[in-house]
Image (cartoon, rainbow, N blue to C red; front, side):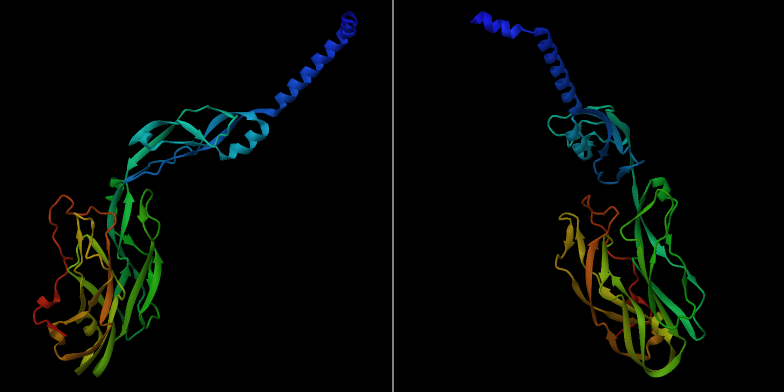
Length: 353
């Protein structure tokens, strides 16, 4: 019985062995056809820098890696892989930063880094607050003149290398035409591109309010608009934002008076008495906005006029901490308060309405 079975097994054994070898060859070849090995470039993710540090040049965006695994898996997941730079490995100056890990790699896929470091250059950038200036072209028609202009913001913060910041003292806006302008107007102007390496922090749009008035001499009851409202006693570490930037008045005069005399001889003030507390690192008092009454001060040349009404009588003031400057007082010293504006009440012969 056993002999009969063995004879059947070994009958044509050479052909059977050849068939087995051919089947094994095709099986191995089929399995190998599902394995893919290829080189791809994966993006590099760099950490965000804090403080005044920045990347001096655009660092390398990708690095090459070799991936190995099932064809369908490799082709699908390759798009999600990326090299991550650890924040603690980034240092000031020029360094070769190691690539410690590749994320987005699924199980069963092998990744070999073909480049283990990337060059990174970190530099220190300074901040500088500079005034914004506007240039006017042409003139209003006869019997009209430009009296004042108010820029919002009037100062901007610029970042850049310290040596580049030393070369800039102001930002100049594109020209604004005054031709055929017969009344006050506002225009939003974009700050032009700065020299290479310098950037404006925050908005680059500046609103310019221009006051155009007629050259008139009148008696009796009149109105005047466009009187700038200014802060009195503003903490130098704070910025104040008004709900209204300008004041309009209704007044009476027995003598002829020129409109320009009103607008140059009257100051509208509000008390900006909030302060920055360097210990608690917040604005005191915390309740905002502040409701402040507008105080109108006349110089001695306008003693003969009577101010009948002001609009607005009160405004809202919102405060914020200045950006981009060192806040004095953090060392425990008491900073000097005040905005540096001269109090019109100290003018010779000044009177309050």
